[in-house]
Image 1 (cartoon, helix red, strand yellow):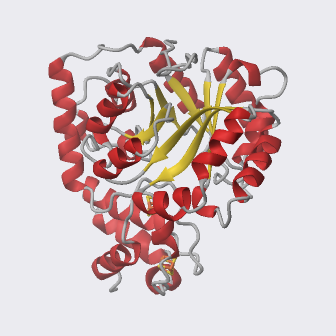
Image 2: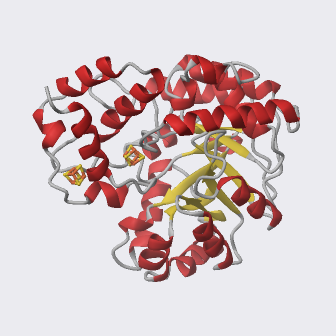
Length: 369
Ligand code: SF4
Ligand code: SF4
């Protein structure tokens, strides 16, 4: 598998990274630890060397720590993230970082990210709690090796955050063939690369939506639907690592086999153009830009927000509104009209979706019997 030089650092991780956010779950909802250990180690044995987790991914950091025992920690570039929106005071930075090191059973994080930055988080957390100074101190102490951020806001916000600190060594942005002009987009990828930053890509399949596209979209793709989506990114030399949040053994096997064949410049200009046309078709049919990340699972009424938006988008894509409407109505009254507009989900959503408004639209379309 190809390894690309990680910006100005001395790291050269593999082009496929294992996203530890969507690990396989047991029936009780807990992570299947045995599966995670066996699967991640086998991927590392095949050349995967970038592992991405976060404090905010539930039990993921602890399980990642288990996976990387027995000598596997030294074989990977380990990435995790500071949940800046959870900071309540300056001291929280060190407390949370130390907790992360303990969960991950390591004495240092190779690449450390401020999680899901936006203009709002920059002002209300990073600046307010002097986060950059604490992060530099952690770097001097050897707890973290390289400093970066993950990002969910507009391109202009991305540039403001790049400009605000000259210590960035890498960034993590959302990019796929459907979202080339969304958030940082390809323009952000190019700008970060120009400044010498390594770029890690998240949501290459848009939360799985690009793994299951309508026939007219699939016909525009040069290879299979998943392989094409990943190749679109690996084709660009500015991309260092593409993260995939794998949750089945089959997905891991497939993605490893695609990565083993991939290299920069592998697509022709015609193939890239055709994929951009496919992305246009997808964009025109998607109603809600939800990636299914589940960060909005903070609803006091337990509304299944990602499930509802997945049904709604799916109905636009495959035209089967009758089935989707039946599924929606089967979710029951609480899911359909339990929103009290408290705003908790909106504050958590990295895609900045006005969730209560979108839920109203779904209900208007499908709520009436
Ligand atoms: S705004 Fe509505 S959907 Fe969102 S957390 Fe509050 S009650 Fe739940
Ligand atoms: S609504 Fe937002 S937070 Fe919730 S799953 Fe979708 S993208 Fe994630």
